[in-house]
Amino acid sequence: MTDSSVERALEILCNGGLVAIPTETVYGLAGDASNEAAVRRIFAAKGRPAEHPLIVHVAAAGQLGDWAATVPPTAAVLADTCWPGPLTLLVPKAAHVLPVVTGGRETVGIRVPAHPLTTELLSRFGGGLAAPSANRFGKVSPTTAAHVVADLGSRVDYVLDGGACSVGVESTIVDCTTTPPQILRPGGIGSEEISALLEGALADADGPSRAPGMLASHYAPNAHVVLVETAQEAAAIAASSSGGWILDRSDNLVAYAHCLYAELRSADERGVHTIIAVMPPAIGLGHAIRDRLTKAAAH
Ligand code: TXA
Ligand code: MG
Image (cartoon, rainbow, N blue to C red):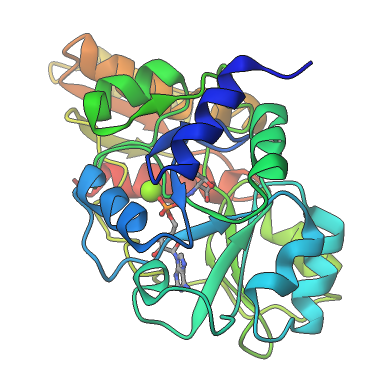
């Protein structure tokens, strides 16, 4: 079946327009990565500083070499094993990659997303789609088409509705240009899995993230966010005079990641003044959830 919505999205992208695309992580605000005017429109629509680079999305792992000057062996291993999937690889950029995409850097982030509509779109498009998360700068990433419309409205030409994003947090970013590689942003694939695939050759991911744009107060809802380590602590705060609404799926990391951004948005819609978030264990998807909650609380 050729989806008429994919047809429409393709036509807009080929004419330099912007389309919100569903991925397994979050919705992306996509434009033709080889069209400088289209890429500039992405920054304008998001209200994002020009020095924050964009990830280039492609249909299949075989296209990594089209965008990389050289493919480090570590990147080849991770691409073969994890793509399509919630992983972005930083590699040395090929000469044709526009500086506006990389924020003037010599590296480019590449990812093969796993969502049937976007896979079909990318296959037929043939090239690369530059796409940051489809939210206004500094806000919570969108995990449904309705979130995109609420954030961007007419700033996006078309929203390709692929339902709710299955993973719910952004991709893990691995810088493969250093030896050993390093995780710049925890995300949909846990560091333990990446470390195992690289046979342990992964730099310590502790400390502040090195990806530009990973500001301390990112992913911020309007509500005040208080972090606790246990459900008991959360209940005690909620019962006290300060009160608050408890966010806790720490018993199920997959479910926690899946609902995290939608819950933060819904708390804002309901006018919740304080979200009491229970931190999940720091394993697998828990690293990404802890990172995003910490940033939400830094607001
Ligand atoms: O799951 C995802 O990665 C989503 C979906 C749409 O694919 N995309 C996403 O893009 O989260 P964005 O732009 O919101 O976050 C990408 C992060 C930014 O912090 C950016 O600075 C960093 O990746 N980044 C991209 N290219 C980079 C590069 N060449 N060097 C360093 N950091 C880079
Ligand atoms: Mg983002």
